[in-house]
Image 1 (cartoon, rainbow, N blue to C red):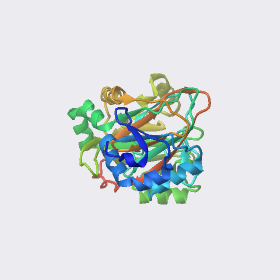
Image 2 (image 1 turned 90 degrees about the vertical axis):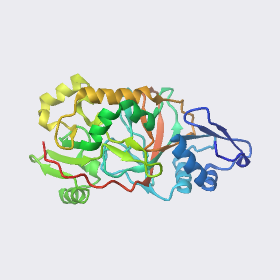
Image 3 (image 1 turned 30 degrees about the vertical axis):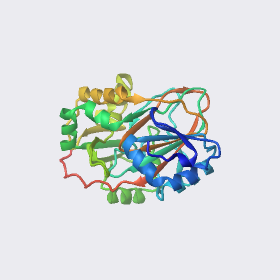
Length: 331
């Protein structure tokens, strides 16, 4: 571990994620992050994740100060895929799905052409049972998925198709953070998202994005998409069938195809999900914990929980993005 001991920090590098614990006479987390930013950046590229424990970050304001000290760029959450609530300046609740649900491992905003390089979480109150935020090393996940699937996704990319129906999934106003159709059209045009009103209340959007990405520091090829999350098979057979009966298979709330419009084999997506789960690691949250992830090198999720759980998050440092994929014929 490269962190110097003179800063009164105790590091357990045998844990995953590596845990940096405050020791007697500790600095505040903002002071430590600011003073050791260069070393921490290097360690984050090496390990993909760092957990800061015992620094007394117990409220939104304390988390904001820590993030301001580490990163000059905290991002808004727009073109959303999950329900969240703003609780501070570009600080949000973690995804607000019901506690009995599992949130699969994924990389934040990997369904977009640009994304946060890093994501941070702060536990203000751990659940009484469960509620872990599992993580997975994307280097290992990519290797486990294997070249056959990775090469195919890299070459063909991923087309994300969404249908916004009244009272189902997130409304388009929430997803795009706009209140009128003119602003929606402007957002979609500026982000190269195709949008079409199919009827008075049903909006359809499509965008082709990357299947893999190169890490800007290491140049490693990383599996980087959310096909396994957006594809209807992720819902389970019963829910998928129910939605298809309600809306038709061509108007499901979310679906993923190859960029050229071809169907993605469910068996391949099952292999992808299995690869994520095989590499999953989890730790028990403690109040005041701050977890920092390299968003390209480490995936995250959420396990079901009981009791009150409060975890907040911030998106840090915009990626340079990727070139727009070559136009593909619609399916």
